[in-house]
Length: 213
Image (tube, rainbow, N blue to C red):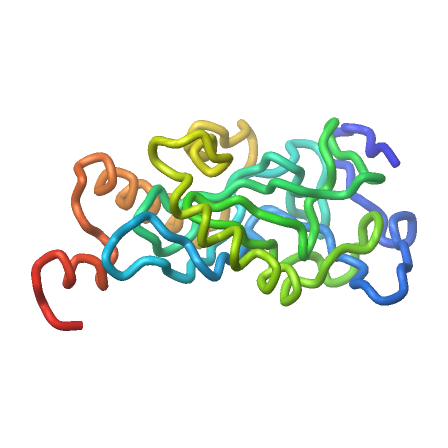
């Protein structure tokens, strides 16, 4: 199914409902919905960390519950890890396409700066595309990959090293609520700390200074 890029368009829940026994029928992801990673590692003393945070970019012209719809490739931020604190939607629907990209839904994979996670929030009443793996099962199967991902960031050819700074990809005209604006400001602080090689994760900072946790 193709969703036409009409200004202000919304996805109809009745048009997109799809049943698949044994697997969840996923709610569509929206701007501000959160992704979670259980093991985000960057080689610091107390890595890996659990991190969770919102999507910060969505479709400029397709909306779900009055919020921009998420697509494969849309970025987000999370807190807190010892890297860039960013993630990217990496998988999505094979049958529902938004602006030329697969719709990103609850349970779809997210690639974080130090591991692999999943989108854990989405629309409660807009069900999109084919069934997908539940977030709980996704977290279970992603554990080994997340451990390897920590070794793939910062200087290797792993997919995690290819994640771009989401601050460069906010689409014009997308309004963010105050909570998301605060999260973006927090992420910028974390990015500056990373560039200056300053520990900003509390646990890692204590370890670096020799303090007992």
